[in-house]
Length: 376
Image 1: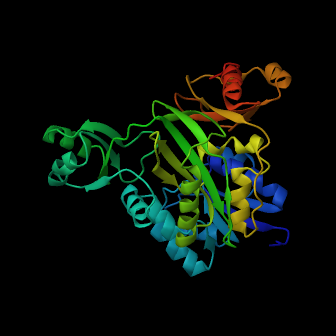
Image 2: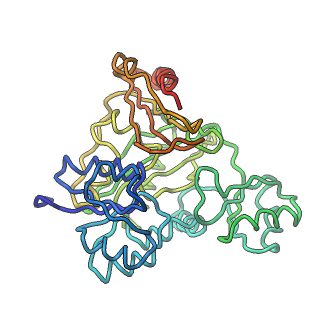
Image 3: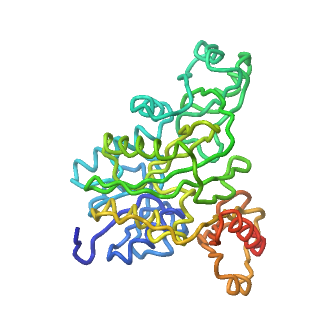
């Protein structure tokens, strides 16, 4: 698809994902319009097309949408019904569609979709009451309780025993008004992730299977490409799944490798931390793919340039940060990506480092070394 100069891509959100989407827009001749809460967010530094407001405010959102040709988002935690209503009223396309976003942002309806399309995932129960909670023993002896909405980086996730009494239920319930699902705890060998992208013509492109390491429920590093004997089978199922739900854009699947099978843990209907390596290791980044897909371009297949590792830069203090520019200039296989966040604080994602090498494990060793050259 050809676009005239000045095609306007609206991005809901002003964080680092919006920033990287905006930067991927310019080479395509697309103008990134940013809807952010304040003018110090990362994406506001890379686009002059800035709208300030609350994403759940009807008037602010309407004013933004009517200025855009197509709209996407960096986080699925938005008011899906409001977006759906306004997109129809203003005849503005939003991808992925608000109705899909609404289903995938809720862990219960996300699970229901996975089961409906026979995507392998852990057994679950919907938990709203003490009576529901008493049924968790039917799943397994060890249980993961997940808040249905607004859970991320371990927030809203609780590991308990199936024999837990009412005091445990009362404690968990008090922490969330959104309800829960309970899952059998999966004993896995590795945590993996897989990103796919689907364009408006219906073509799905593949990104490499990667392994991720979580520390304190936050992504520490990613390496790839990796292999699994069930990888091709799962890819085919997921491609058919995207076709059936008519998904447009990039989508990430977080996986458990049990040794014998691959289970989908969660879905993120957007660009994802596990795909940041693509900025340097592939001929097409996940951000370019997402912008192209939602804007109507036909997606080219990405090619691997090198095995890779990505290490996250998480804040440790309230000072700094600083990095050894001379070291990075001399070690050009390690690429520093800084998010431009004004405030550094503990566990905040401040940036990441992509490192390329002949083998993923070699890349990881060098990327971890590079991370020590950054003071957080």
